[in-house]
Amino acid sequence: MTMKRIGLVGARGYVGEELIRLIARHPHVELGFVSSRERDGERVADHVAGFDGDLRYRNIAHESLPDEAVDAYVLALPNGKAAACVEAIDSRGDTPLVIDLSADHRFDDAWFYGLPELARDRYAGERRISNPGCYASAMQFAIAPFASRLNGPVQCFGVSGWSGAGTTPSDKNDPELLRDNLMPYALTGHLHEREVGRHCATVEFMPHVAPHFRGLSITANLHLDAPMTRDEAIETARVFYAGEPLVAVRAQAPWVNHIAGRHHAEIGGFAVGDDGKRLVVVGALDNLLKGAATQAMQNLNLACGFDEFAGILPDTGPAAEGDHGA
Ligand SMILES: NC(=O)C1=CN([C@@H]2O[C@H](COP(=O)(O)OP(=O)(O)OC[C@H]3O[C@@H](n4cnc5c(N)ncnc54)[C@H](OP(=O)(O)O)[C@@H]3O)[C@@H](O)[C@H]2O)C=CC1
Ligand SMILES: CC(=O)N[C@@H](CCC(=O)OP(=O)(O)O)C(=O)O
Image (cartoon, rainbow, N blue to C red; front, top):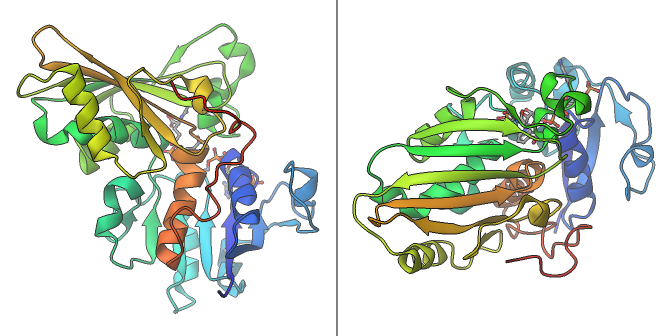
């Protein structure tokens, strides 16, 4: 099989680092370039534990992206930076694959919204793939099995590790402000509220950031149109995700420290109110993996015609030893 060469734009970030590791272990893809302004000329091996080789970060202006001999570009830049890159890449004229991890194309009908477990059947060879947001992925995994049975908006309470706020300094990734703390933010109108509303169901989302580094949890409060027992809810979710290696359905509510460093998402809890019409489902995933880099690799595999889980499974990450499932 011919190796595909990948250009990674925004490789210094937390997500970029995970993508470097995933691409390095993938059997059919290799890194063509990794870009960072701050680390220009520095060896990747000096920054990414476990990475071997002499590859160096390069500061590549977006105008120069088309000159790079790669088959696909993966954009892991802050929001608002993708358009200039895509415009430059378009000038190549051969429509290379672009996967954008930012929020910039999640509301753009010209792009495929790549939440594989819920959307892969609709993939029609698009060369432009928008990767979903981290909380938005967890919310959709929790809600989707019940989406046709909702009676009103879903309330979602979310808590994320601070890596979700990226490397640009802010209150949300300041260890001093986060010490012994839980920081609410964007309590109405968070972008992922709109994202889930567009792609799955209407939600009212209340995010928080916590002192841990990686992994997030969302607790979804669903109002159903007809009563359901807890066993029916669990069975509904199990049938919905049957055969999905990256979405595990548990009876117990998942814990963030069990999925941090793992490639899969978990949903569980399934508490039912007295009238059977209120169902609470908890979803958890690693925001840097299933909430970002792992999902991007699934999308890359899908678009390249590889096995969707190539380079991802078996899960050999540091947290993968033993079965942490409840
Ligand atoms: N962190 C998370 O949990 C998740 C993040 N995402 C999305 O993935 C993308 C990357 O996230 P994350 O790794 O956390 O982000 P970071 O802020 O950690 O990294 C951003 C990267 O972009 C580069 N960069 C920063 N500012 C600019 C700029 N003005 N112009 C060009 N390059 C710039 C940085 O390198 P340098 O400054 O050296 O050039 C760095 O490589 C974002 O769009 C984010 O929204 C999606 C899901 C989850
Ligand atoms: C803790 C924290 O700040 N999390 C980020 C979400 C990370 C993510 O998925 O980002 P994008 O949708 O921007 O790609 C936030 O709430 O904006």
